[in-house]
Length: 271
Ligand code: NDP
Image (cartoon, rainbow, N blue to C red; front, side, top):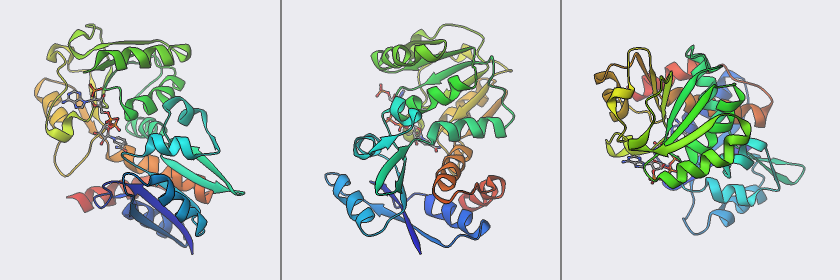
């Protein structure tokens, strides 16, 4: 049976084995997908051992995505720009790297009927998730992306890096220009601590869609705050998780699973 894995630390909480089990059943693929806890100081060795024993592909999650980028023989432009890899593919004895997080986000936005072309997007956060999202968003011909981060310098660096691909500006959280945004994406990890990035609530209005990359059993802190301050609609990152997994699966197996049923199964599983 072909072997796949997810490497992370921690990893036990991950829903990826469940998602890939559903994809495999749905597409009649015979494969094994395990969550593997990699020691923090031995990621490279853990991955090499897995592939030396016949592993076909893997996902990589926190905190190893940047290290995975350093391990691959070749990678896509998305992974290159993000400096991070979440999908490893062993092909002809070469380790290939892809980053499906940002495309997963964009696919989920489109699934939810969000029009990205000519849209004005505010991205909160400048870590790995924000970085991975920028190129796929820009490829959808957004009119403007403003990146705001707690540590302003990281946002400015991102804007500089990505401005060759479209209109990207940046600031600290409290200095976000009061523009009419269509979409606010919370790519910060603030919700993990039950916190909300300190942007001005007057940036919200009843036309703005708010998207928190975090997901869980309960509404995230950011989405609760967005609803309280009048945003039109709030979405969480469950669909992004399923879509990035589906893109990894299709790269490994050459078949794209139907994500609609898996989204619902995961919602039910979390409920
Ligand atoms: P990183 O650790 O790389 O980056 C964290 C970012 O959050 C930084 O920009 C940091 O700012 C900011 N931040 C942290 N705490 C706060 C706070 N209290 N207020 C404001 N800003 C804060 O994390 P990732 O980019 O990898 O992940 C970000 C989020 O996206 C996480 O919640 C993660 O779970 C989610 N995610 C979801 C995925 C999905 O499939 N649904 C996939 C990948 C990520 P600073 O630079 O100042 O430290």
